[in-house]
Length: 137
View 1: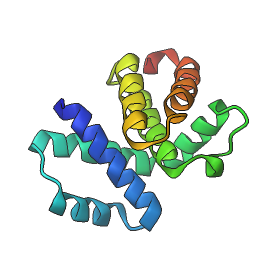
View 2: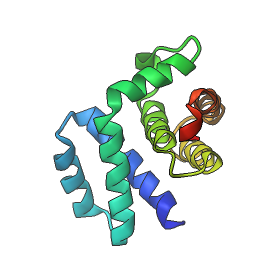
View 3: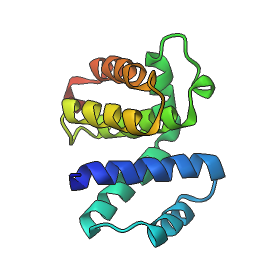
View 4: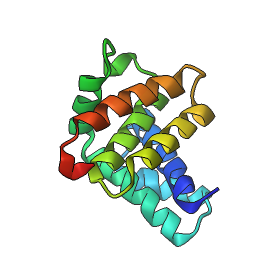
């Protein structure tokens, strides 16, 4: 698995854990890295994604709800929310090509969520991307 893909997986796991436990982000990171092994650059990228998604949670959630037709955030599976938040954060950063973010999010959904999740996540992220300002694309 590519290092950036692994970093996204780690970031997703921390984001999910953070939502379930409501611990301070630094506590989640500290506990997570006691058990997970990775290259330093993988760890740095995972932490950037996790911390960024937590820091921008409110605006990310608003963005997701805007593009999730007929879905309230609280009705979504927790893991799907985490995948969407992570991908929405990365899309807004604008540093990673859209297709990479989309493919990675769909792969995370295939690995960690239900069989219905990949097309659900794909649809929301596609709508979200199309609504981003041109400078973020």
